Length: 161
Image (cartoon, rainbow, N blue to C red):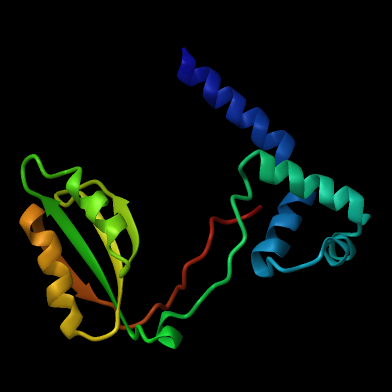
């Protein structure tokens, strides 16, 4: 019963909050999170105060979760990216995300379905760094590693509209 209520609330929420104007605001902000409220208003043909109120509502509702700078790891001396799947050993499931949080080279960590339980994305200074990094995880499970050649579809958010 609670699940049905949540689905109903989610639908009502989406219908009220994700109207065409807010979707346009989200598209503009996703393309350039540094837009001023005045410029954002010009782009969607609204006053700055009206836009500011809408953006604040989207932030309060958790639709906009933050603003950040997209940084190229290669420019910071991390030219190698790798994806690592981890199948934890019995009793070691909780150790993987704990260790991932403590490892600066881990950019992302996902709990996934299938034979493996975790997927990590790593940024490395050199291929030689991979062995030492994997050695931190192997006491807790089996790893499978792939080196990233390119990103034909770069990271992006969900479709809007």
